[in-house]
Length: 133
Image (cartoon, rainbow, N blue to C red; front, side, top):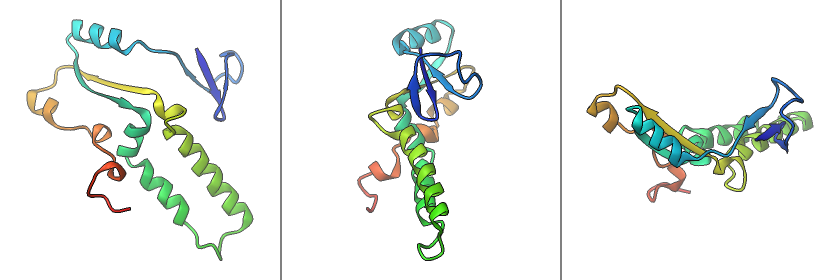
């Protein structure tokens, strides 16, 4: 089991109760197999960073960068913006939380529903060849 409190790792799930994220190593192959046995359809698998970027986290990071003009922002405003950006960056960093797996399974869906792509499983705009930089 892994514990994260304010984006710092530790291994004691009994401190910061209700104020920390808990995670564990997951055997996604076993989950997929069990889901298949229970009639679940695998809708997709990706990394958390890509999933969140496809859901618009990159846009949110961009908004945080342009919320206030440099002339109007106070040192406290800039510090708050930088702290928010850092927290969001940690969620998508491939060297950390962004490398966590996201498995999506469904049950009782029609073929049309299964065929419809989920936004979180689409290619984030910054990774598409036609996206401008």
